Length: 447
Figure (cartoon, rainbow, N blue to C red):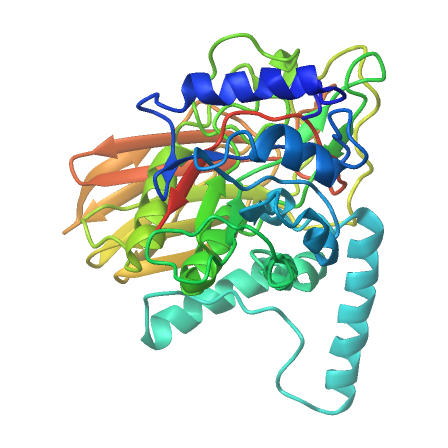
């Protein structure tokens, strides 16, 4: 609603016409027999009425009664959702896709608390510490422990201190609690006897935007490393009974760099950080997790997924000349290549960041995560081997630049497939801040 008028009844009529003109389109999401409608913002829209709640109710939801299932993202305190009784059939928590509370100052405080806890444990002679554990899902025994230990050994204190916020559902719980106070004429869903409001969570692989004061005037990066996309999906799947719908953010939001679809059509002056940065390799990973959310079981098809993520690297590529300076730098962090993979049977995978180096490991069935270091001048290469023979190789034409003249915090994603196997590489640079923006296209998954 940041780009659509909502100050008069005429504006509401325009919105209603837009909804009804697409309600019967074959690509329209239908929910309980009604067209599913959401928003980006809108809490300040009154359509010429006394309040936003009155405006949405009298000018939008009541005229479309029985035709739509309305689940907006109003960006309000979830404790105030009750004020929209008779308006909302549910709530979309857009910002749940990222740990947006992790600003630079927040990260610095988290590292300080982590260090204090670590020192306290050492003073007590404890063999354990406050390190966040990156475990290996779907794999057991000493191999899983070795992989987890290898990851932890590569992580900096900053990453360990922030790990618990990656994929967290704390903000989801706040919104779900807020929905419990929402009373009124909530459309009943199929098989729902009490008209319980729907909750739509968000999941997103990335966030970087860099606009100067001459345009959107926003310049920020959200914390997206440490396998945010996978961990957020895993959290939602593990508690899928709490979440009615998951919205993937986004299909084509080039301006904020979290697009998973192809780059095509007009861009909002984001070419400087999107050109050459294809993200469609994320779609295979999205398909895997979406199927698990819908069914409650992770797909068992014989496919391998890999992602290589050099975390918190230096600046790369270029930026708009009229844009503002880069986002505030994050606290010091290690440069890592974090890898995730899913295998049906045991496979040997060789990872390397140089022409003559390699890091080979045999992985069990299931999802595994590990990390290897990466430095300026390094490249990315992965080979999947079966019975001593290479069955798939990926070597994208991308070199990590340590001190380029310009920068780009967008993600570089590369993938390869062969028969039943696929590899996914993800390269990115990261800082920490926050922002909001207009509505792009999205994808939603309900179970």
